[in-house]
Image: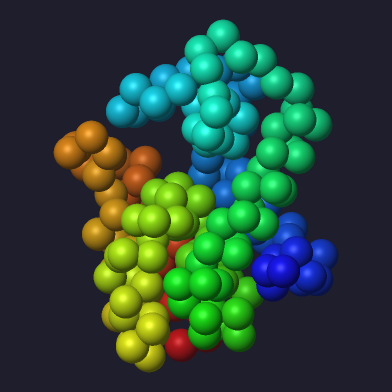
Length: 153
């Protein structure tokens, strides 16, 4: 069970607020910046064009997804379980956006596992491309995630 699942309401609220704000809410399926069918708060798994969801359905999908990604980041970077809440949520937000596989192979995870916390946080800024293009929305998001990650260092 992930820290998020057994965590305090404040941790869950920070995760939902952070990821929800970055992803945005769209109740009808659309194609993201690289053409992948997406709905709700950036959900891509099992989504087909034409799908429509309600806000309560989207909120439930977000919570379920966050818990799944929390399990993933904790498997890849066991020390993240003990990190301050903002750092934990920054890592969770990155993994939610790029996928657990990419997160686990990233320099963010590698540096965190090597105990290089500051360098791990700075490495967030490398993840600003989609489809080979730098997207300003990702630049903003990664800078915000990096700032969260660096809190308390």
